[in-house]
Amino acid sequence: MSEYPETERLASLFDEGPDAILVVDEDSRIRRANDRVRDLFGYEPEELVGSSVGVLVPNDVDDHASLVDAYFEDSESRPMGAGLELQARRKDGSTFPVDISLSPVESESGESAAAIAAVRDVSEQQSLRRKYRTLLDTAPDAAFVVAVDDGEVLEANRAAAALVGEPEDDLVGRHYSDVFPEGPNGRYVDLFSLDPGERVRSSRFENGDDILVVTDDGDRVPVEVSAQRVNVVDDGVVLAMLRDVSERREYERELNRQIDRLERVAQVLSHDLRNPLNVAEGNVELAMETGDTDRLRAVESAHDRMREIIEEALTMVRTGSDIETVDAIDVGEFAAQCWANVATDSASLDIVAPGIVYADEERFSHLFENLYRNAIEHGGENVTVRVGVTDSGFFVEDDGPGIPPEDRESVFELGWTTEDVGSGLGLNIVADIAAAHDWTPTVTDSDSGGARFEFSGARAAPYDESFTVRDDGGENGGQSEREDPQR
Image 1 (tube, rainbow, N blue to C red):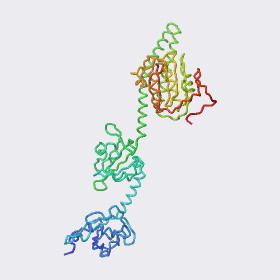
Image 2: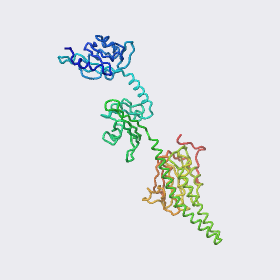
Image 3: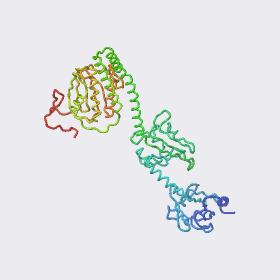
Image 4: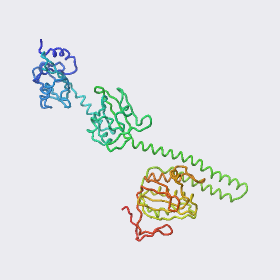
């Protein structure tokens, strides 16, 4: 009877296996080898019997002898040198990467006196692994490789680290749900609960909510998830690619705002243009029937009103959320120029606090002109409009009837007006311009009881007391050249 009956039983299966099989004793001597060693190492099986296993696995690579000693101290079936890259050596001296699995063989006494080593060439796997890692690292999207059984992140690429704001090594070993806002019990689990070969691609949940990643700073970034379950080891892994769609979401929001603006403008125009058009048509018919040319003055007035509504509508459509240039604007001079562009009748402009505001010049002019028209429409032809700059922004106020407190939250809504002749576009345009600059508009009472529109959050600076205001709205200074207070 052989000293190793278990070995004899298993040896009958060795030559049918795909791997090179060696029986190695506790002295690291090869006791038996199957025919596969010929293809893998270039040795005849008989040549290896009695030789040290170091012939095949050089001692200068990963201290093979200590690995063998450690195995026999605690012998159980497991990979040899787990986590290490083992190299084997052929008869011609060339080396190649291998995986080695060890299983104990008990003698008649029940002690582990030998081990079966299954040696597999992993050159192709390592080549594929290098290609895979290169693809992973060069991928523009964040990539996570997640274990199916426990949700552990096995790998993460540079883009993933950049997205989350943490090093790659800090992401590996954690549960994948750590990067999502709802934890392991939320709906995000379904994104990774896939059947073998199943794929999913989505940037929103069924209710329309964005799929979000929580960064190290606590920010929430909308992402598109492309995930697939791949059976590469054991139960397989889920390869998930996460693409930052923040810019896409902002584009969608802006597009929806534009569409909404166009729809609302169309509604206002269809209603507000009809009235002056009917006035013009009626007076033209009467003028033709009676020869009363005085009727044409009413036609002219109606045409002026239609022109004003159309201009407001065009401004509304063209006013978006992006600001291309921001310049330092002298509010006193600029407000006076805008005043000249509006039919002000007997109304007057008073620059009570001159200064500098940084703004987009074209849109800033639309803001002033619409506020002026609003003041004249509601305050009458003799209304006085005052403009001033504060440390935190600027204001435009009048001495008209003012706006009731219950209406102040609604005045910036499209279509809001208390006058039959109003289009309801002007103050909505003002709100859009403020939003484009990241200013906050509010409505309150002026000292005279009229309406006061304040804009906070603007980059602004009032001039000092060396400047006085002339009666014509201009400014007199105690110096020949005014300096930019922001410089």
